[in-house]
Each structure stands twice: as C-alpha cells, then as structure tokens.
Amino acid sequence: MSASTLTPTALITGASSGIGAVYAERLAARGHDVLLVARDRQRLEALAADLQARHGVNVEVLAADLSQPTDLSHVEQRLRTDQSIGVLVNNAGIAMHGTLAEATPEQIDALVALNIVAVTRLASAAAAQFGKAGRGTIINLASVVALAPEMFNAVYSASKAYVLSLTQTLHGELRDKGVQVQAVLPGVTRTEIWERSGLDVAHIDPRMVMEVGEMVDAALSGLDSKELVTIPSLPNAADWQALITARDALGPNLSRSSAAARYK
Ligand code: NAP
Image (cartoon, rainbow, N blue to C red):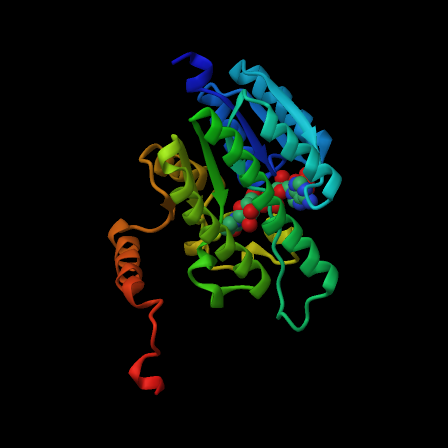
C-alpha cells in the first residue's frame, strides 16, 4: 500500500471554525493533505497557511455554501471524481432554538438544506467513489440529541437522528467494500455554533461542556478503534451496547403478518 493510500486527502466541511477546524488540524498532523470547505474563504485561507507551515501537508481551500445547490453540486462532483480524496469529514452544520411552531420557514429550510440534504449528498458521493476504490473513511457529525431529542430543538434534533440513521445504514452498505463509517455524537462542545444560533454556552452547566480539542481527539480515538458510533463523553461503552442489544431484541417482531393481540 502506498503512503498516499494510507494517508489520503481528507475533505472537511465546516472547516473554518469549531470542530471542523480541529479535525483539519489533527488530520494534517497525521499527514493527510486536506481540502477545507466552508463559506468564509478568509478564515479557510488563514487556517490553510497555518496547517501548511506547521505540518508540511498540501492544503486546498474550497469556499462553498453547501446550502446552495450549485456550490453543493461542485463539492459533490469533486468528491465523486477526485480519487486522491479518501476521507470525508461531513461536519458542516447549524443549530437553531425555539419551538417548531416558532420556527420560520427560512430557518427550517436552511437547517434541512445543510444538516440533511448536503450531508446526504456528500455521503452518497463519497460512498460511490470510496466503494469503487475499495477504501476510505466517512465521518458524519451527529449529536447526542439524536438519542435524547427532548433535550433540544425539534428540527436540529431530528436532523441529527437522521445523520445517525444514515450512518448506521451506510455502514451496512459499505462494510464489505473496505470503507469505514463513523457517526460522532458530541454532547455540548464549546464552539461558535452556540452564539451563531443565538444561545450562550456560558448559561450551560460547565460540567456538561467539553472543549473542542478533547472532543475531536476522543472521536479520532473512536475512529482508530473502528467504532461505528462514538459518544465522546459516555464513560461506559457497555451502556451504548445495551441500547443496541435492546433494539436488536425488537427486530424479529417489528414486521409481522398480524397486529399484536393488544390491538385486537
Ligand atoms: P461551528 O463552529 O459553528 O462550525 C460550523 C461550521 O460549518 C463552520 O465552519 C461554518 O463555516 C460551516 N458552515 C455553516 N453554514 C455553512 C454553509 N451553509 N455551507 C458551508 N459551510 C457552512 O459549529 P461546530 O460546533 O463546530 O459544529 C460542527 C458540527 O458539529 C455541526 O454539524 C454540529 O451540528 C455538530 N455538533 C456540535 C455540537 C456543539 O455543541 N458544538 C454538539 C453536537 C454536534 P462558515 O460560516 O465559514 O461557512
């Protein structure tokens, strides 16, 4: 296996700040060339210069608004056709707060376009290219609210449950093709997402807030251990396994020719 196969180029969405910027730094430190995607070209170029200087890897900036069809299609095509890309960090996302009744159509559309449509289209492009090459890694940023939707806003939580579900299905589709898939479920992580969505992280109990470097390092440790689902703050991995075991127990009874006796 050549060095470039072992450390293929990583395309990271939402690389201009927060979790995506730390992934870019950590993957560059591991020797990956990186392709940085977000809207803010200036911030991406500053990060690119820093990563090139500190890690000596090639860094390319691709400014794109992934909620816009033309920009999304451009990034998608790049991922589908550029065989040097072997890692996708499907990270760009936005949050919102308030009840579903209070949400404006524009807020709902923007969140669904980025957190669901763009994530799905990029995962699909990566699945096609990586599957054909017989190698690759897809990391999808979900959230713990995928498991605890009552904790947060309805549209955001549902979008993250979607990302978890997408990842679990994708794993089944790709596991025999040499492609690794991971869903990362962070809890509250100190990034700009909070102020961008009009919330102040300072109002959250600090015992619930993780620093972004610690979160990404834990997620990469989970990736190295080949975890399908990584919950960085969960102390006991057996708790997640217990949930999967309970879910699997439902399996044989989820689709049957007759309704359960209590409904008759
Ligand atoms: P962040 O600091 O606000 O970063 C979001 C990134 O997405 C930025 O680079 C932003 O860059 C980019 N972005 C936003 N809108 C975009 C668009 N339309 N097109 C392209 N890029 C866009 O937030 P973060 O906390 O790092 O979030 C990263 C991911 O982690 C998200 O999917 C989020 O849901 C998830 N997450 C975060 C937390 C948390 O507590 N922080 C917890 C669980 C999950 P530009 O503005 O330059 O476009």
